[in-house]
Amino acid sequence: MKKIALSLFVFGVASISAPVLAAQPSVLKGDRIKIDYVQPTNPEHQAIYELVKERQALERFRDYLRPMRLPGPLLLRIAGCDGDSNAWYEESDHSVTVCYEYLADIQANVPKETTPAGVTPEDALIGPTIEVFLHEIGHAVFSMLKVPVLGREEDAADQIAAYFLLQLGKEGARKTVVGVAYMYGHEMQSKSPGLKQFADVHGLPAQRFYNLLCMAYGADAESFGDMVQAGYLPESRAEWCHDEYKQVDYAVHKLIAPYVDQKLLKSDPTRKKKLLKQADQP
Image (cartoon, rainbow, N blue to C red):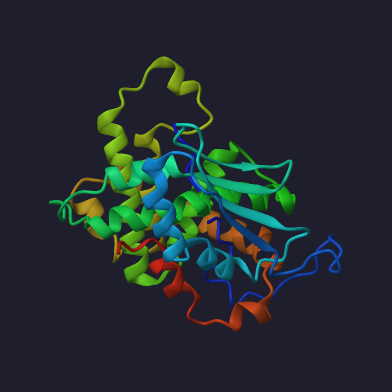
C-alpha cells in the first residue's frame, strides 16, 4: 500500500494560545520550507511536471506551511521514482518526496464524470493530491519536532491528514474527504487483501476508508450525515466517531499547535483557499 501524505498542521489553530515548551525558542523558526521540482527522466511524466510547476503546487504548500516553526529546513520535492508509485518522508535529510508515478496514478483514477455518490472529477484529483503531502509532512513533523506517537505512526499520519482536511471549511472539507474516500474505495475494489497485507505498516484500504469517514462524521455530523444514511459508514461505528475526532483534536492542540507562529499564521487569511486550488486541473 502506498504511503499517503501536506501534514499541514496550521489548519484551524489561529485562536490557540501556545504553552511554554521544553524546546529552545531560538532554534524553532517559521518559513523553513524548501521546494524542488525534479526534472523527470521519464517522458511520460513531462506533462505532470509542467502542470505542477505551472500551478505552483509546491509554492502553495510552502506558503501554507510557513507558520510552522521547525528546528531546520524541510524540503518538499516532486520527483521521478523509477517506476515506483510512492511518497515518503526521509529523516536523514528532512525531505518529503512525492513521485510523479503517484500523481500519475491519481490522475488515471479520476472518474470521467461525477459518480452516483456525488464525487466529481475535481474532488478525486484534489483530495488525494493534498492528502499525500499532508500524510508525509505529518511524518516529518512527528520526527523534526519529536512529537510522541502512541500506536502505529502510519495510523497517526492518516489521522493528522484527515484532521487538517477537515479544517478547510465545510465545502473544502467535503470535496477533499470524498475525493480521498473515492481513492480508498477504488483501491478496495482493485486489490484483494492477501495475508502479507495484514502485516503492512499501513492499514488496509477498507480500514483507511472507514477511519476517514468516521473522522469526518465525528467532526461534522451535519455535513457528513449522508455517509451514514447511505450506508458508507456503519451506524455501529458512527456512534463513537465524535469521540474519535475529539481525541485527535486534543492531540493536535496539545502537541502541534504550540509550534505554530501565530503572527505568520494571521498574516495570510486566504491561505486555505490557495491550497485548495493547488491541484486544480487546467
